[in-house]
Length: 408
Image 1: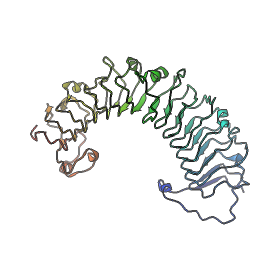
Image 2: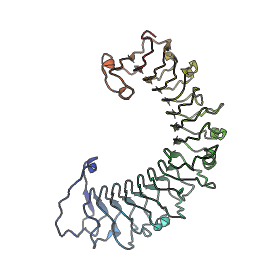
Image 3: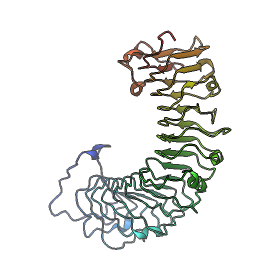
Image 4: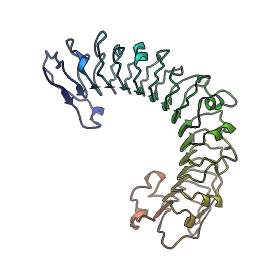
């Protein structure tokens, strides 16, 4: 009766397999003074009817068979963390109006969950909600003004149509793979640091001529990481993009009609730029010279110009499947941090100039089309086995560049 901690867990990843717990047929008891309860793959449809959760501080029931937790309202003033991840049979979350100190709520992959209880709006200390891939979630409570909420993920909630009614204090927001139809015009996300809007499946969301205009009105210069994808109406970025001068990661992928980036922009903090799949983009991006990772895969770029030598922090340049790429000019001596370059499957590539290559720099050049692909560059393929890796080695991948002169 005095047990405070009950921790029944499986090895990481084993919940993907069914775990069979053998319980006594009459099992109907959990100690009343439990502060920590973790039971991976809990086999019952509900908690024991006489269980009193008032002393709980942390509840973790990942991959459980629960359909519900308990009935009624309980005094849960000590509860800080509730994790029900991958409880695919869970249909409802109990009334949490008395869980005044709850800080994190995780219901990711609870595919039977349809809504959050309205009682959640009373949780003034709630900092993080993860409801990723709750694929039947349709409704979020209105008036959910959670002033302490910092992180909210609704990624993969493929039936969610309305933008969540959230506080402007949120710092991380992931709405990827939802069907949200419009953004909230008056919402200002002043503290937002990271925003993900990838694979949005609603035609209405991006139907404007300037599809990013409503989004830019919501954002503030504090934004550091922005992930967008699959915006068919996006042809160019608005000039207001230059106001996001604290960006560190910018990913705009699979925007098949994007043609240009704004001129005169210099994101001094930008570390990673990913434009993969922007197949109409033909000009080499020059929006920051501080980039360390540049991903231009499947774009329409025709050449890598000499101006890339200004990218003195560049460590990764990835341009696989750039079908129009014909000419590459790299001054290795000025790209002192360069580690990996991938031009695999660039069928039109005919000329590569590696200028002023220092003798101290070892280069592993892969051209064997049978042994090297863009996906195994990090592995010890036969083309690389003869090279003993050194800190100043540069990996160059030209696999399947059939028109490239081997002596280039």
